[in-house]
Image 1 (tube, rainbow, N blue to C red):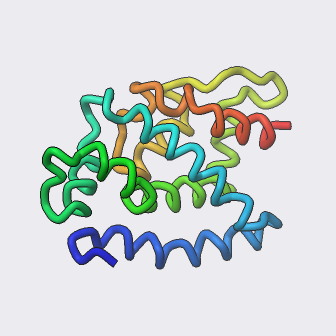
Image 2 (image 1 turned 60 degrees about the horizontal axis):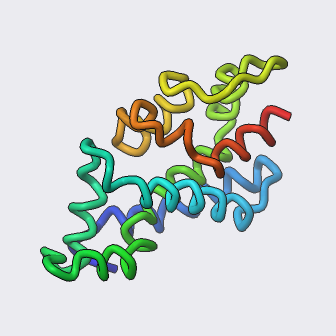
Length: 156
């Protein structure tokens, strides 16, 4: 793994915990990873428009050997999976966390479903766990179709 990006190796180690939590919750880890990946890839596509985003650009440059320079777009395409892997693991972990499920239930209004709120508990928790407390305000959580589908399935 990239010595300049230890967070990627840390995410690989954390994945084992996500798998264990998923199994305890009766969820196939192979099903939760693609949802987490879909959420994060959607964010990746929008991240260049987020003024507050500092983590991914820095990681992308480190993956490119220090500076992607004029090959930025090429590196952005070929290094996406590695650059976003820590966030994919964090989101997948949140999807199988009973505490997060309770936040979703509370945010949803329980029996009376309402849309994501940028200042809701789920947005705050995802932002905190990803080191991006501004995520809800940027519209990342409310605008995520993959996350909305998971939210709806969980509430049902």
